[in-house]
Length: 313
Image: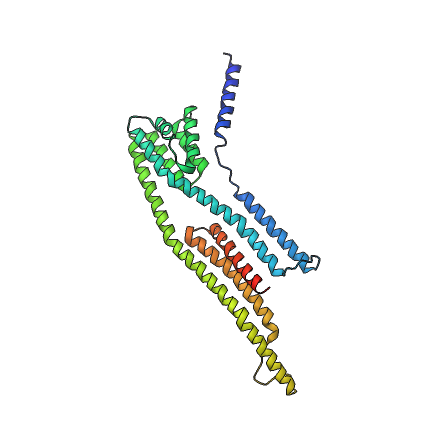
């Protein structure tokens, strides 16, 4: 076979392998989602400016546009990051099972490459497609260490990266790789169990944050529906009595009824601030992540806005 024919054959083989295995890295749409969120924020800001100049006649208050802009930023980005974190968690949860199966295959005298190919026939949830890609790479002639490295580049999770680094170094150093894999599997299992225990413990505190937020909303509702109307009635009564006595106001009694709408606006602002702050706090408590907290902020902000708007529209 001529060198040119061999070159074409190798090129065809490489192209087929790329079609079979796809890209070595998963598409990360975080930046795209963030750009879309910022674009939505800019759109609502522009609408707020038009409404302020009375060029846009919609039955909305200026603060409504601010809330919509916050929802547009918190919602897409927060939910995308939360979904991504859940995907990572599902992958890492099944990693110890795969490492255990590879170690068991290695105890029968198989090499690391053969052990991975044999273990790839198992079911490992969301990790299964990545394991099958790695096994296919090995069958196409990719060294086991390089296939493991490509797996860590595709999955890109802290636990997978750490486990892949240990496996590659153990395989390159030689010796009994099965014992190393067993140790790595136990370590990964303990790490996951620790994370799950922390998540269960922190979920209680997240629930406390939600309860405190809804208690705050209930307090605002009581003030809006009971306290402020009574103050308005009392102010009108005082004004009527002052008019009957021919006075502008009764000495020692001064109820500023005119600022009641401003007080209502301050209540709404306080709900917005609490929703944003409490949501981010919940995310930090739950997973140590501000982006995940944006999802909680979105939920709280929607609940607070709809509650106040529906009850006091």
